[in-house]
Length: 342
Image 1 (cartoon, rainbow, N blue to C red):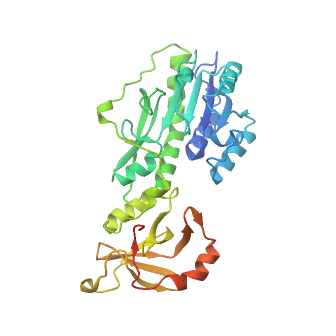
Image 2 (tube, rainbow, N blue to C red):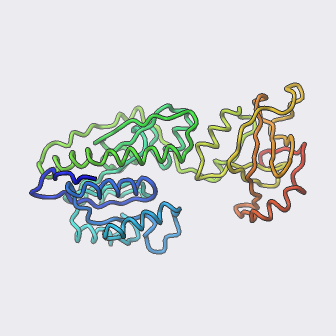
Image 3 (cartoon, helix red, strand yellow):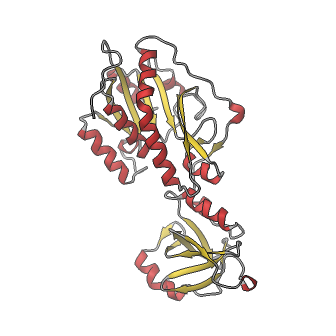
């Protein structure tokens, strides 16, 4: 990539990045490629907090490797609100703290830190879909479009003034994973414009040009929980398909066999019905179990659910896949019903 000329060569904008996952990594790469316009003084990864057993997936290893490859300071603190992080700010003196996915609600003492502008990258078209997982909520609500918003951090979650926003169109078959990837790609593309706006404001003293959110239009969705994966067999095939796509890859959808034995479904398919409509069984009934595949009746009599990958669980403890495969022929048979727990 051809180096870009600096926006303001007399002084560089100092940026400290905090984040995780696909969005955090996209912002890291975007900032690094615009090193002529900013100095990335350090990175605080959510998974680098000492003693943290929290968020981790393969993308986090890539994130860590990129920080090391770029020779950046890999900050380790208990959290953004910790006293030790305030000491880091005093040492590094960033102009901007850019957040790209984080697991803490930022407290006022950090928001009001002298000489520091806090900017959050939220993967939705704010004020719609505030909260922890807008990737899922836009699918659950049947939206045709989402967005990426850079906004000031405010005491209320995702409620700060909008600095920069772009729409992200959605296809009919999106999953949470594909929406996440699209938003990360758009956020990466927005970094040059964001830096131009921040440079003009902080270095040149120009107005930031932000706009307040219309809070009357807000919607908020909380963090996904395992119970959100519980299937309701009264749903139409379209509703069930949308629910499963929305929760992938974070929450496995599940049901209970005869209200007792917990089973998780992975990579389900919706296939044309195999029995005459007049003989269609009650939704949730196992129609057949052949070659390890479960075919289940749906409320939509034109389609059935076909599941090839699944796993039994006891409470929150999963059986090994080999044990599930071994015992499934003895536990699953046509005529049984998947229901809510008794």
